[in-house]
Length: 420
Ligand code: SF4
Image (cartoon, rainbow, N blue to C red):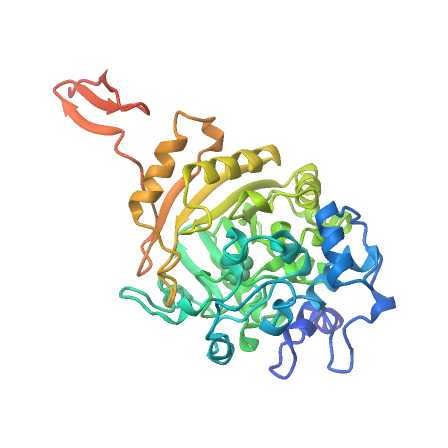
């Protein structure tokens, strides 16, 4: 790599720098986050009426330009219980001092995402998925920090090679919102895990020297929290490798900080087709005019979107909620892709449903809505076994030359399939 490029693209990775500096792409500790008047003009202009009311109440000085800037959203995120208590009654979080000091996954919620649950009940679904709870202090049997053993499958740092033809590249440790059930909570939000060009180069060289790798997933943390030029460096490097056929970006940003999806970003992204985006979404209430605009831009750029949803007790564990979410995603041109059983990270048992609940949800969708609206329900096998799909028992076995099947109404049918 030429030296100028190295300098230009080198994100600040040293421990003394804060996450915000990493995300803002500052290249030295002398550069400060943007001041009020320095926020660049964004080409994102959608603000739904409820978000407007929220902004007037809690950020009365914020202009449209600031609110619509993803950098402003990150700078003004809720990162402390004190600030969060301005919008929510947190009295039930009796141990929040302890939680703050326990070095668990930090708190981070964008003002935009907070506007979705302000004025709702305290157990409101999406709030639960991002607000720390004292229940996180309860560690249950079977839980471990890295349940998928991803760290054992890293041939080089920050690159997981679990399947022969595809790899998962952990590009950053930062997210715009920290989900309390995150599989990678052992590594996100740690300063030492804010990666950059030097770390990426090792991964890129590994991919370049492994011709079997045809599919690269860029994940994290959340890659869309990186500045455009960092992302473009990564995409162009991967695209220069002839055997990399497809690139996928795993992100929650379109749902929690849709302002990030600027026309400038998608114009850059579409240079690196075929490009896919796996979008993390948990609840139908996330689908707002802002999210619709963001997804419209992504789809119009020819980027194929699929969804990933974690099944969470008290958040989305009903057929009705999941069906509504899948329908709304389809309308945004996002193909429902996976429902995950919640991984056993420490302190996550309050989110985990019995496996029977996941099967019940699939059964409640199959035959009752379009096939396109039905994702795969999978368990990411603890210990690194990969994703294993689970299906209700449609296949009932054999009866001589017939396969016996049960349909979505529970009726039995036979299909002629001679055994030679
Ligand atoms: S956005 Fe993804 S990586 Fe970040 S905390 Fe949520 S689940 Fe984890």
